[in-house]
Length: 614
Ligand SMILES: *Cc1c(COP(=O)(O)O)cnc(C)c1O
Image (cartoon, rainbow, N blue to C red; front, side):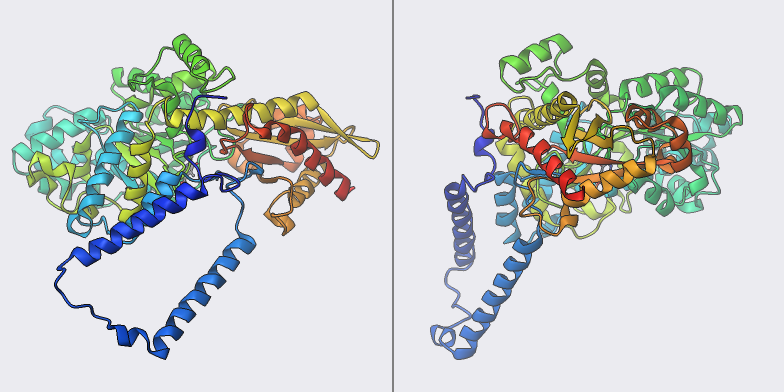
């Protein structure tokens, strides 16, 4: 057996840890009950013993109980069994006991992290968690700042919000304090590096004109029809990005897709030619977004090459804000950190992961490694505790490399507060997109991070198991090549060799040359193995699907379609391919559990589905 604690971290697919879970929950409820009693112990109770005996009192309890039972039956009837290793669909899995207990315990106090007084304990926890995430992602926690958002979507909004306001700041300085940017052209001001802009913030503060400058920046004067440049995102982006561009007034015409290759990673050559094209027309680049773990394929963009490209452009006087959308892949950086939280050398890492039995496979690919190594050089990062952090909803996070950037969006004179206040701001709501927000989420993330180290000895082990499960599924699909049903052969083709823990694949009947027919086939298999079947509790396996179409991906899927045995001109005609998509977040699909047999039965359930649809 592996020497690890992952088994003790989750309730378990069969509620194996129910005794501990109940004990902890009751312990925390008792703690809360006593806390109430200890507040002015001499105060008389508000509800008397005789009142508690009244009929209406009992009736009310009964109504509450019935409502709860109805709630339970509704939940049980239709909820997805995310806790089960048979669930290989969306980015869901069981959540950590520490997090669930932390959440449920905190909610009894109902803290609100909008303002410090609404949740003193949980506001500090939120800022502490922000620093932990900053460190995990390769930032200097003393300089960085991060906080919990309602999800990756909100964190992405914050990222683009910062980028947008930063871009306009130097021009505002020119209006109000021209002496600070003497001799610089507008083009140069629109191409200042993020660090130079942050230094400018300090200088305007020293001249006590920061507020005035900020009012001349984009938040005072508006976005002005693309004057502040283009936002470049890969085709594989999450749909929160076009929404962000809309909300922030960037305009869809300034929101530019960069092609992805047949590996579904951002095409660096295309990124470069896109930038070159704009700067040759004197159009600045406001921001570049790169994705660590795409939502549909789990692809890891080559962050290191994007960083390198930015650094090269900076030498030529061109700069842009760089944001990493690591909503999905961010926590996997824990696998790369040794027991002292140091980022490991590649060979050392592979060796250590095997020795410590974090994984029984060789992972990662070298370019995935290089991407994770470079994250600390971006200006900000989105990371979702409610995805690979195994925390219940709603927990995303925005993390910035340099906390000075907060002043660009704050609606409170944060800069007049002393340094210490930024660590636990009195009004968090003024530095972030949201207002009132649950302290319970911070309680959940904090408790999980307290229990599980953010390195290979903790989270790395959980995520290592998830990655290993995905690799094993990929291998099983590759090995089986085809399934034979009623004398017909159905070929299985994986989309790509996974960078991370999502496995996409498609079936095609041998000899079929019609893409439409192949899409129909995979659609019908999905219907048999997903929420669409209407009987998820009876299904052997639950998967998800996705459509890769020309509108979003250009011709990137064409190579895969041809690998499935479909002629290329079919793609040119149909321009969309449907794939079955399995996010393997579960930690239970590894060699030392019973579930290894499940790969056989996973394929068997696909076969059953094929039999059914005939
Ligand atoms: C999930 C995801 C998001 C959005 O996060 P939510 O938490 O669902 O709001 C953004 N980007 C990527 C890459 C994602 O996978």
